[in-house]
Image 1 (cartoon, chains in turn orange, yellow):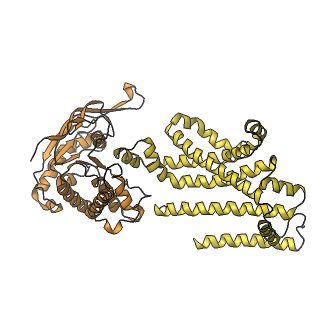
Image 2: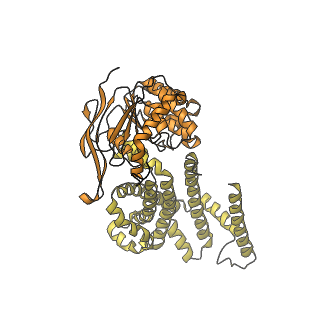
Image 3: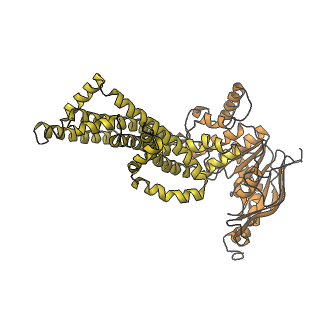
Length: 270
Length: 250
C-alpha cells in the first residue's frame, strides 16, 4: 500500500473577518498539519463549530487558507477547485428541476466523453446507488436518503480521485445511516478513491474510517489521530465488535473536554 | 382542485347571469351596457368580419414585444442587482413605490424622445412590466439554496453558467409569477397609452367607440382583452403549477 500523500495541509490557518478589522477577526481553524494517503478513508470528528466544514472547504478549494498551504497531488489548491475532486454536502444538493438521470449527467457536462461513454457512466452510477428504478423520477418524489444517493451518484460519475463528504448522512435516521455507511464503504472499495469524511457522529467515524482525526474546540486543531485498523472489506456489522467500542471510547475521551469547551463548560465535569 | 374551480365558475356565471337579467329587464339601459350575450355575438361578428383585426394585431403585437422586453431586461437586471448588495439596497425602496408613479404622465415626453410611432407605447408597456419581473426574480434568487451554489462551484461553473444552469432554473417558479404579472401590466401599458394618444390599436378603438356611444364595438373589445389576458395568465399559471408540483412544492 502506497503512503504518498494525496492531500497535504501545512500549517494551515483560517480566519474570518466581517469588517476586515483585527477586532472583528475570528480564528476558525489551525494551525493544521495533515496528510491524506492515496486510497485511505479518513474521517474528522470534532465539537460543533470547531471548523470541520471549513477544513473540508479548504481541501475542496471552496475557500482559501489565511496562512499555510493546501495541496492536492502535490499542487497547491489556493481556492481553485481541482480536477478529480468530488464533494457531497450534508444538505440536499440535488437539482429539483432535473430528473435523477439528468442530475447525474450534470456532473459529466464538462467532460469530453462520447455520448455512449456518458450513458455507460450514468448507467453504472445508477446501478451502484440502486437508483435504476428511479432514473426518470424527480428528487421531490424521493426520500431524503435517496436524494443523498443521487448526489453521491452525481459525484461518482466523474470518477473522482478524492471524495469529500461533509456530514452526508446528517439528516438521516440511524438505521439508514448505517446502511448508507455500508454503501459508502462499498463504493470506496470499488472506486479506489481517497475519502475524506466530516462527521459529528463518533460511531460513524469509527465504523467507516481507516484513520480518524479528532479536532479541538475553536480554533480547530488536530489533537489526536486514531488508527482504527479495520480490514478493507469491513461493513456495519463491526459495530458489534469489542474494538469498535474501544475506538469510540477513545474518540470520546479525546473529545469530551473539547466539547465542554465549545459549550462554555470547560472543567465543569470531570 | 375541482372545488375552487367550480366555485370560481359559479361566481362568474352568477355575475354574468345577473348582468344579463339587469340588461334584459332594462335596469341597465342599452346605452349604458349591452346584455352579455350581445357582447359575445358582437365579438364573434367583429372577429369574423375582420374589421378590427389590424387594431387587435397591433395591440397584441406591441404588448408581446413589451412583455418580452420586460422579462428579458427584468431577469437580467435582477441577476445583476442580486450580486450588487449596495445597488439592491438603493433600488429596493424605489421598487416598492414604483407603481405609485403615473408612467402615462410621461407619454408626451416619451413621444418627444422616441417619436410618434409605437415605440413610446411599447416603452410604457415594458416599463410597467419590468419591475414586477425584477422583484419576483430577486425573490426567487434569494431562495436559491447556498448548497446549490457550492455545487456549481465544485462543478467548476462560472458566473454565467451558474446563472443559466442553476440559479435561474431554481428561481423559475418565481420568475413565472413575475411574468404572469408582466403580461397584465404590458397589456395595461399598451392599451392605456393607445387610449391617450394613438391612431390605432384596441385602446384607441375602445376610446373612439366610447366617445361615439358605440357599445357594439367597445364592450366586445373589452371582452376580448379580458379573454386574451386571462388565457395567457392561465397558460403561465399551469406551467408554474407543473414546475412547483415537480419540486413537491404544491
